[in-house]
Image 1 (cartoon, rainbow, N blue to C red):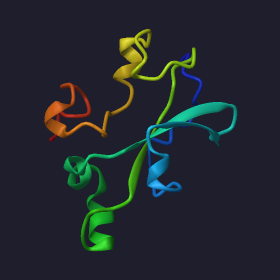
Image 2 (cartoon, helix red, strand yellow):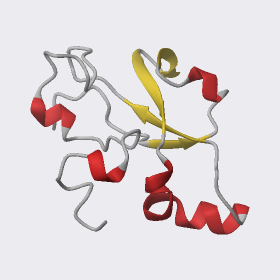
Image 3 (cartoon, rainbow, N blue to C red):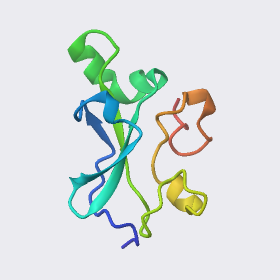
Image 4 (cartoon, rainbow, N blue to C red):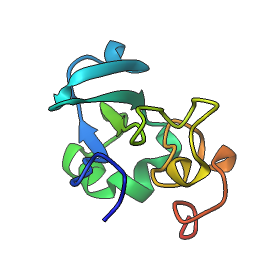
Length: 108
């Protein structure tokens, strides 16, 4: 068990609302919890969305990443956020070359 409030993590979503909703906190995606949507950098498309590219036949795709806060409600970018929490989700809004080395970049 974890102190993370999400038992089921929806890491990625396709076209949740308008792209203008990126970089905002949303209280209505997961009952009782805020999430933030971030626009995914195109550098990740082949790695994470290869099947979607095949379906749509070409990028760009309307892909936003759902990010979640830690048990205290702090997002990855908050200064007080725990390093373990920052490593628990990919930072797909960053270009792959800027992403911290770790589990999310090992197969790139």
